[in-house]
Image (tube, rainbow, N blue to C red; front, top):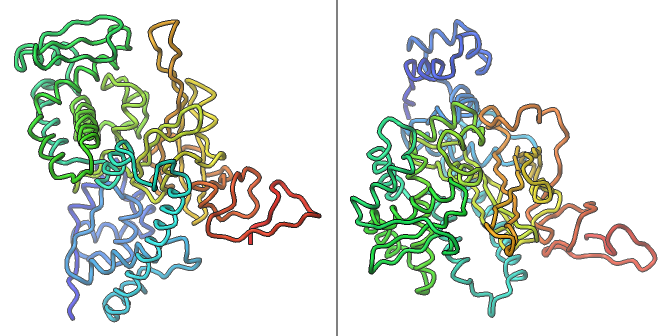
Length: 465
């Protein structure tokens, strides 16, 4: 088989210009000489498998490897599988390239075996769900079913995202985001909605018969704006939302209604933070949440959540995990585009920084953490207080967390300085965590035996077999 050589000089020059790198700086990142880089940029030399690997690693948001043929696709899958921390000594890129080309059947079996290993871990998590769920027969509640739908969709809904982005550009013009006055005007003129701001009406109260919308004036401005965007999206993008709901195959009417609400919320976020503009700005400020929040007039949580949805094909953002945790430790929102998966029914690892953040509002905490599979993550967490608008009602207190795998640390401002710190060993939940020596363990792992010695007592009254 003749391998097709890949020349990508113009693409490399574009990446270097986008990052404002000199040739010497680019060459250092790729581990090659300046003269070699110059030859590649002038298409005098093709890209080698090692350089393809280095480009994908050093510039993950810019470099999208061209799927040339079955061997190239096989190499990409083989490289991903062999990079699993399960393997102490991964093979080199050159070795993987030879295996993919010379042993395709063996490569495919190895890839399938690794996929089976990952699925086994997912099945173990299902066991944890069954142990933790408080539902009769383990059936999912409508809220859980909708949450799982968004997770399985990758937290990105293309038809809605693009429709909301198109509408946003119409309303905002050259501004980064539609102004609150523009949202009000569109609701009144284009959608024939009468609008008032009043108190004690709930966050948002819409009468579809009268076409009348009431927004709670005690909310912060960014919350009022989000409620306006929600109602605008629910009406203007009704057909797109209905199309997604009809194809979702949810079990109950309540699930379908909740999904409609969730999709309107998703569209509201896409309307206020249009995909291309938000992604470009996020990269420019290295995902500094406060700067994004001010630029787009949204809340801290809204900006974090939107970052976790930037998974449009051919224009992906950093793969983040995002979650919201309440005072009791329950995970009330969650999504992960990384290898990190959350405990689905609370019980998250107490060593994770998000639990400390709940108790310390308006302060950003950062952490370098390592999961049992050896993957390291940099994460940011912030405790938030949402005012109730009345002394008679308690404000809502919770924390949000946003993080990514350490390979994206250059793109994440909160990772600065963390590489020199010791990584905190965390797990998904105690029932899934294999660590035998954790002082914070609440339960033994569900797939391991325990040993009890009445004459010896450690932090917990058992040892893990």
